[in-house]
Figure 1: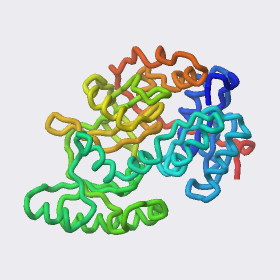
Figure 2 (figure 1 turned 120 degrees about the horizontal axis):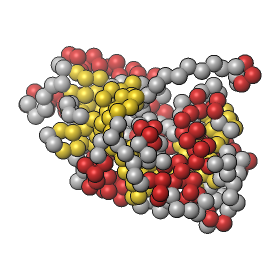
Figure 3 (figure 1 turned 90 degrees about the vertical axis):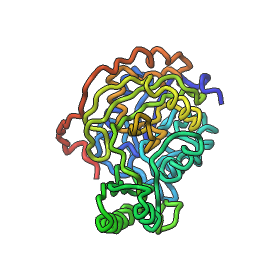
Figure 4 (figure 1 turned 90 degrees about the horizontal axis):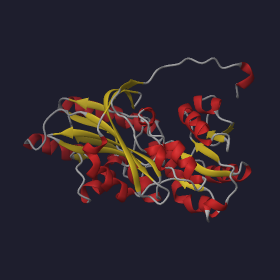
Length: 351
């Protein structure tokens, strides 16, 4: 399908839109009246749903009718491009990317393989390591890490989290064996309560990831690929504090520090649009701890630096040059996420 021959109307769809009201506003500004921003979510009264041009309540992403519901929304609302904003949603939609593109809809979704790999933190580390990208040492069995700790192959503290988690599910630092066993059992309960067994591809006893603790600075990289999956821009921020699994206070960093890593990840994943990469510095080298080929919670900071990815995407969808929106970013800043209370008027409440 030649996307350039489509009508100039450029409606876009965010699935699992949740709290990303800023993305709705960024894309609305980028579209300049040439299209509408439609949001789909399993809960109605979320920030993104309340600012969207059209808000539609759908099933949860693991429901058997979910993909058909999203395809139907695309047809009924003349959607030109679809973006998934949650890991599980991406996992559900990515295997059906061709169904969107057969309908002339540009799917900003990773391949089905990378949707699975990016969710499975252990497999992701294994894949990156095979491609020469440094990652933390990791284990998925208590007895394996116990042997390493006993032999001195790894030292306390160690970091524990859900292997197939999101929003820092179960994340904890453990300073001894008894503490590690307690947190391991607690995280196992949290993983089960979060519904992880519904979509996990690993064995039940391997649901929890244990990693060497990295004490260095944490960075979030932005990797921007064009519609063909080629690198066109990148950004970098240093994380000072986290909240609810996302960067909260940050300072800008020089993206050229990570240029070789950015280029390798761009080629390896071959995504379209934005990909967020989390890493920590250890002994002067970056170790990748997370890869998310979708808009991530750190994107607003890059946007404030002048990396206007929504404007670039809007230009590409209209067969125009998006490059001018991705050059000249200024990362000499400190920033934080503010909390802005909003009143929900009865007239816009959806039950």
